[in-house]
Length: 158
Picture 1 (cartoon, one colour):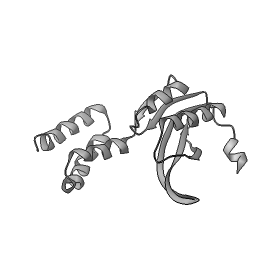
Picture 2 (cartoon, one colour):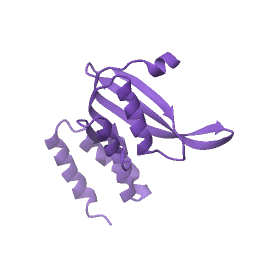
Picture 3 (cartoon, one colour):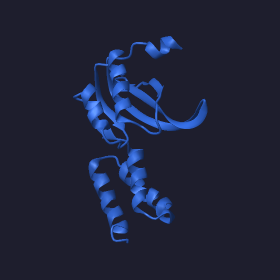
C-alpha cells in the first residue's frame, strides 16, 4: 500500500479533478471528516486515482488542498492544464501557488447543484431537465441558445 501512495506520477496531466467528501470516521469517537481525492487524466485520456487523504477538522480546506497539490508536485507532476474543483473559497489561490499556469475550472456538478439554491425545491426536477441542454451542448453557440431558452422560461419567475 505504501508503494502505491508514494509512486511517481505522470509529468503532465491534461486535467486533475479534486474534491472532498464528508465521511464518518471512528477515531476514538465517530465524527464527520473530509476525505480528499484527486483523479488525474493523462494526455492519452487515461484516468488514474492520484491519491486519497483523510483530512482533519469538520470541513474541506483550501490549506489542506495546498498540501495535497504540493505532494503531487513532489511525486513528479510538473504541469496540469486544468484543475476541476468545487467553489471552495481560496482553492484557486492554492492551485495557482503550486501550478501557476493551470486553469481552474468549476466542476459542472457543483455549478448545477448551486443553481438549485435559487429555486424552490418543488421545481428542482423540472429545472434539472431544463439545465441539461446547456451543459450537454455540442458547442458554445448551442449552449448560448439553450441558456436563452432557460432564461425565457425561468427568468421571470419570482
